[in-house]
Each structure stands twice: as C-alpha cells, then as structure tokens.
Length: 220
Length: 305
Image 1 (cartoon, rainbow over the protein chains, first blue to last red):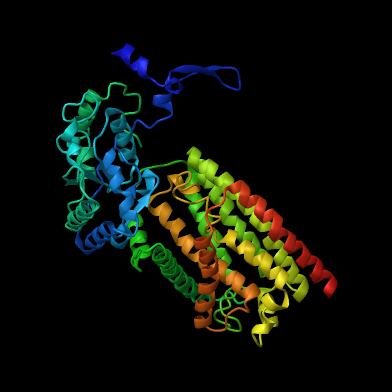
Image 2 (spheres, chains in turn purple, yellow; image 1 turned 60 degrees about the vertical axis):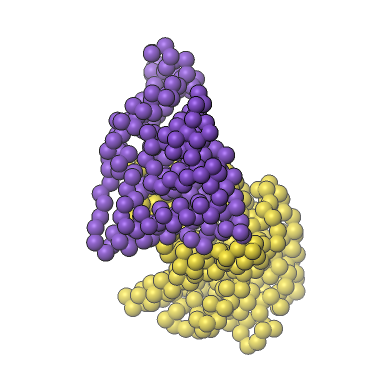
C-alpha cells in the first residue's frame, strides 16, 4: 500500500529536504505542511423568520460552478442563451468553487473526474447543493458496466436533487432547479452537513475507488 | 469644514442612497445587456438577494491578515471617493466633506482600493489571483495616465483643484459644460472612464470566463459581499466624478440620478459594441490615443489662457 501511494504521489507533493537561508536542512512534507489537516464541522442551522428569509435568499440566488463533468454539460449552454435563459430564475454561473454553491454533476463521472469533483465540492462554502443530471449519476446509465466510471453518485457525494433522463432536456434542468428551490425554501437544503457528519463513510467509499489518492483528506 | 454629527449622518444617508442606486443600476444594466442578447435577464432585485445570500454563507478559511483587510481597503477606496466629493452642487447638507483640494484626494482614493485589493489578493495564495491583480494594476496604471492629464487640463483651465469651483464654472447652460469648453480634455477623460468603469472592452481583469474571476478568485461569503457593495458604490461615484468634471454636476437628486445613469450607460454601451481586449492591447491603447489627446489638451490649456 505504501509503495502504491508513492507511485501516484505528484512530484511536488513528495517529502523532500530543503535548506533554509541560515544553512540548516529542513524536511518538508507538503501534504502535511502545506495543507490543512483539520476536520470540517457541521454548521449551525438557524430557525425563525430570519432563517426563512435567508433560505429564500439562498433559493433565489443559486450560483452554479462552471464545471461540466460529462456529456450532460452540453445542456448548460442553452440555459444561459435566449431560448431558456436561466438568469430569470436567479441561477447564475460562477467560475470558481469558492463563489459557487450549486454543483451540477452533469452526466457520467469518470474516476479521474470524481477526484476533481470531490476537490471542487469540498472547496465550496456551505450551504452547498449538488444537482445530479442524467441517468448515469443514478445507476450508471449506459455506462453501468464501465471499468472507469462510477455508478451511484450518492455513494461518494451527497445529492440534493436528481434529474433523470439520457439526456434530460434543458427544460428538465430548469424543473430540477425549481425542485431544488422548493427544497431550500422548506429548509431541507443542508446536505452539506450530512456530508460532514458522515465524512468517514464517504471518505471510505471515495478511497475505495480512487487508487491514486494524493491529496489531503479534506480539501479546504 | 463642518465635522458635526448631523453632517456625518447626512453623509451616511447619502451613502445609503448611492449604494442602493448602484445596485439598482447594475441590475438595470444587466437587463439591458440581456435584452440586447435576446434574453430577459436577472430580476431587478437580484443584487440585493445575492448580497443577503453571500452574507449568510459560512466560511472557515483563513489566508492571513491581509486577506481579511483587502476587501476593507477596497471598500475604503470607494467610500473615500464618495465622502470627499460633493453630491449635489450648491447644497450644504449634500456637500459631504469636500474641500478646496478634493480632486487630488479623489485621484488618490481611486488607486487606494486597487492597491489594498492587490495586497489581499496576493495573500490569498491563489496563482489566479496573483496573475489577475498584476494584470489589473498594469491596466489601471495605463488608465491613470490619460485621466490625470485630463484632470490637469481642467485644473489649468479653471485654475483650481476644487470640485465646487469646477462645477460652478460650468453652471448657466449646457454650453458651459467642460465637454464644450474643453473638448480635448473631455475626450481624454471619457476614454479613460471606459477603463475606470472596467466594463468590456477593458474588463479582462475581472471577467468570470478569463482566469477565474481574477483578483477575487478566493474571496467568498461576506468578503465577496463587501467587494460587491464596493463595486455598487464605486460605479455611481466614478460616474459622478466624470459628471462633475465634464457634464456640469447635478443640482438636484433627480439630475444626479439621470446624469450618473447616462455616464454609466456610455461605458455599458461601448461594452456592448466592442469585444474584450487583451491586457497588453488595452495598456497599449490607453497609452496611445487617450494619452496623446490628453497631452494636447494640457498644452492647449496651458497656452490658450
């Protein structure tokens, strides 16, 4: 196991020795020294009229991470162009995970992409939501027996809303957003907390399938 | 100058009005752009919802002290520009803290926020932020040249660095506006305005689909809400700056709103027509035509007197 980890470790993440300005030799372990090892904690969910207002604000301002994972991402460009225009519903695209709170897993997820999806998801600030688009995220779809894609997304990341179909049309995606809004307004959009509370189970599942795990346990 | 608490409260009220006007203007312009593309666009109240949502987001991140202070510096730049410029010409309560050298201080505040943001962004340890801010500072330095030349030309023309005197000289009819009495300085200044507003074609620094968002790559939740508050304020204040310099200022709130809208609309209009420029191209462009016009404006202003 130890040997395998070394095999996939990126060169810049290897343990190495560097000389300090005063000539002393320091050992650097990038994964331990450059990344936070802290475990995340669930955030407090409020109550009362303030929380209701904030839930409404969260629902009416969905910022989607511009990260297409599979063939389903072809359904997103029509949403920002005149025919379907999702800006009407307060859904906007953002380019960085730090500023977005909706992650559309658009179609099949290759194991390589799963790793990036986990990294991006963990970097998003809570409360955050995942919309799973297409049959591939539910049961594998037409890739159910592929050696290289995952079959059930909710084993690896918490999913708020599923949109079934192969491919679902942009209208289906808009309906999915409407459904997500209903969930958030009803105060049920706290899957990010579920992920943190069951982090060990998710991490076991993730590490079972991602063999070249060369990142910290939680990507802050 | 009056430093009483009443004066402060009036300024605070002005800031509140300008913040809301800036947010309303930004959603209006986004709708204008959407209509041009054949879409409907965001609801008018979208900026307020975005702000509420951003403030409610949770964060556990820390990138160091400068990371926290960066957005505050940026906001101080915007609020400082607001505080030292008279809002309504000839009104005592809406004159803010303007004094005889306020134009110089304003030019300083314009770059103050940018520099604070540079420190904050480089502390956020994202390479995207560092590249973004270096491009932003390069472009901003190029924008400053024609803008300063235009301001110098106007200062020579009116022999003053005070907003009130410059606005006073432009009263009594449209033909007294600087845009007619000093067209060269106005051309240089208005071209520099396109860069200062950071709309297309000069919005490469902060465009979401270039290097992700540029300087604020790592900024999220309440940090981002501070930055968005500042951008709402600064768009109005920049428009007011050029309105005061070239379009005779405003003597009522209605005039203020109409004129800032149209000055801002000029930059949006140009942005809709022209595609985005590369940073090296925009730097070259600013140092070529607007600067040449600005130098001629200064020479004309100096020898015409």
